[in-house]
Amino acid sequence: MTDDFDLIVIGAGSGGVAASRRAAAHGARVLIAEADRVGGTCVMRGCVPKKLMMYAAGFSRELHEAEGFGWTGVAGRFEMARWADAKERELDRLEGIYRTMLAESGVELAPGRARLLAPDTVAVGHRKLRATRVLIATGATPAHGATPGLDLAMTSNEVLNLRQVPSSLLVVGGGYIAVEFASILAGLGAKVTLAFRDSAPLRGFDTDLRTRLAQSLADRGVVVAAGVALRSLERSASGYRLTRADGSVLGAEAALNATGRRPNTTGLGLEDIGVHLDARGAIAVDVDSRTTVPGVWAIGDVTNRKNLTPVAIAEGRAFADTEFGKLRTRMDHRNVASAVFTDPPIATVGQSEAHARKLGPVDLYESDFRPMKTAFAGGSSRTYMKLVVDGLNDRVLGIHMIGTDAPEIVQALAVALTCGATKRDFDRTVAVHPTAAEEFVLMREASRRHSTAASEMP
Ligand code: NDP
Image 1 (cartoon, rainbow, N blue to C red):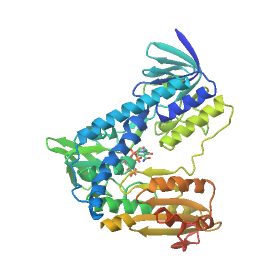
Image 2 (image 1 turned 135 degrees about the vertical axis):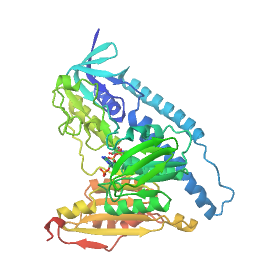
Image 3 (image 1 turned 180 degrees about the horizontal axis):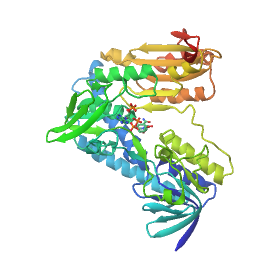
């Protein structure tokens, strides 16, 4: 039997669900196919359970800080199995919400693995479905290929299913996933070693955030093993051994492979219908998320543009508005804010200092302080903020922060950056006192000025 639709979406993660619901709201007849749990990586095995684990870890510091504020008898013991059971209940609840949202939007959910038989024909289980448009939103999966033996280690999927905190953990990689789990597991009491090849974690972030993150992880007892290429990972009865290019060996009871993710393109029939992949194995798309085959689009991590949930959602809605709402919309990939949920967290929007300096003169405004709550409790953790400002026209080009509440603060400031705010706009904004965020509008004097673009320097 053949069923006809206006749109078939493959993958019910954040991007696919958003696109399918928006298309249905425009009147399209939509089916969404999903082989796993509805909600995808972010909700089921990424952002959401990670943040729930981060909250659990944060209590270790907060309980300690409470004593500085006069509380007594607050010390406790973390039972990870209790957290894991509560987390499963929460994920079940969220999956139920996603299923209800799809049903109430009039989107048909087809459980099963989908395969493109032709640009307008998709097989899901025993069903053969047709649609005038197909959207691929299958996401990505942890990659193992960076170093021999990495397939022996856990990935972020398994870490989120732990029921017991390992006594020691070796984290391989220095990106988002690596630093977040290094920080979280350290907070939960594991002895963590973070091994990566660059000189600082989070390649691509502003250098001042990277160095401060490495320092704060070290201050919390994480062994930061930076700057040496990785050779191989081995497993023995007592745990894991990571051999590095200089011959040094790092060991731990458990290991996490966090060396990146690869797009989920296998088994979709893409090669049979002529959908091109780029050199890194992602589906090649144009600015409107069109693949090389007319009638087939792709969004989110499977296209490896900016691999963030809100970006996938925005790409999916832009596709649906353009194709079904006759509202020509294009996702703007510039100035996308992002956060890294370490302790303290990082958040950033716009250009790093190094990037801005390559393009022209810049003024830097910085603030580095111990927050009131930390100082009172006798803690040493600091907050650092930086504004990167165009030296020619005073426009704020980049906003960077490491410190408590950084993601919440930078989310709001990202609006100002999107609107093209100048440093003078920040200066004429009255502070909310006493907050940490007020420092962003109180930085009067530039800490540094670079009057020449770095590329013009001799
Ligand atoms: P990332 O791309 O952020 O980091 C990958 C890490 O693996 C880097 O440190 C990289 O090193 C290292 N690596 C890659 N290849 C090798 C190799 N051959 N040898 C040694 N090291 C290697 O990937 P993640 O898996 O951490 O995250 C995947 C995506 O998920 C990210 O792009 C991010 O957008 C998203 N994400 C977002 C989060 C958030 O918004 N808070 C949280 C988690 C994930 P090097 O830098 O030297 O190349």
